[in-house]
Length: 369
Image (cartoon, rainbow, N blue to C red):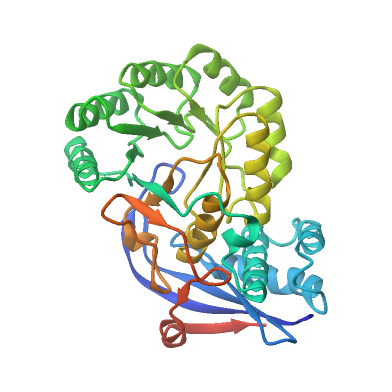
């Protein structure tokens, strides 16, 4: 089997709800562009992936994918994923990590279709369902967070995670409000999205650990390993870092050797595909750590994330980032959480996703090839 062509269809995503997750995103919304990546083979099997998100349009990364990654793929066997992955990463100075991730996902899609198996079965399934947790946007007031948390608690979702306004004193009061609303036992997390300096992070951490928050995510700048190590020594609440930078497997090493985080984290977009996060999850397992998978930025990335979630033993939840209107687009049937608060494993071969090709055709802007 050989790869015969690689193309990226850009299509418009309109009507995105105005959304913010913190200072790193600002407020975004309105419209964006997604890209449908298609890798064709001489045996008629095609692999697909999405490129882009509501705040990272695909036309930012698409030209690099075609110009730098496509030549590394043509004529190669798509089942040689490990060799191809090495070739892709050798081009990471020219093509984005998100582009490498999209290509890797499409190659896994081909492999699953050739085998007639869902990707998680191809890897080796550990489970067929996983609890979901709701991950908030930045909301206008404390009452809105409390109301939202209560709504997901009532629907049997496993947990609720706060993206706060990033004023440390207000954030503590917000965490108190939500804890009082849901009671002592419901799982709550705080994701401060790199918003504090060390003294602020320590004060917030001490406050939320007394409120029985489940984990404390990204309080410090993404590469501030020195202060993460200090923070971890001062707190007993588990600390989660490593979601960023946008980089590969080797960036996890310092976090482990310096004992600067209690969890590893990542997703198929910001870490370069299924291959990287699968390796990272196994690396975390060797250290007795969980690898909690971050939201993937678009619907098909989240399907890819879900396959890895079903195939690893050291993850606890599936993240659903809110609002849906800023996260879900391009599938005729998207990932859903059932009445028991669970997300079920995909069952079709490859990604097993129902791509809305009619919508993509209607919204098509250009084809990069």
